Amino acid sequence: MKKGVTLEKIGKEIGKLTPQEQLKLVERLVHQLGKTGLAMKKELDWNKLYGLGKGLWKGEDAQEYVNRLREDRI
Image (tube, rainbow, N blue to C red; front, side):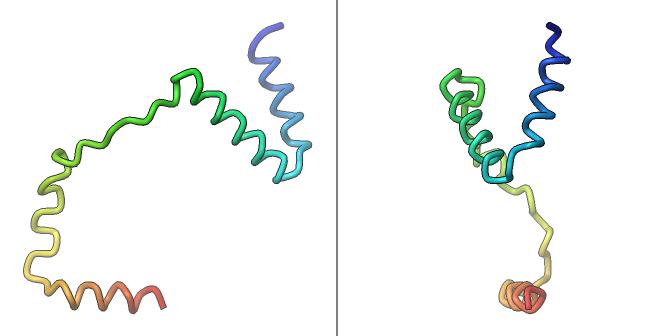
C-alpha cells in the first residue's frame, strides 16, 4: 500500500476522534518522535539576538511604552 493512501486513511480515522482523543494522539506522537531524536530541541543562541531591536524604541520613555501596552490589553 502506498504511503499517501495510508496517511489519507489515517487522517480520516483521526477526524472521527473526539478533540480529547486527538490531543492524546498528538501527545503520543510527540513522545514517540522525541524517542527517535527527530524532534531534538535546538539551543537558542542568545548572542545572535543581541541588538536586534536596536533603535526600535528610540526616543520613547520605557515606562510610557509599558503603560500603553497595559492600556491596550484592557
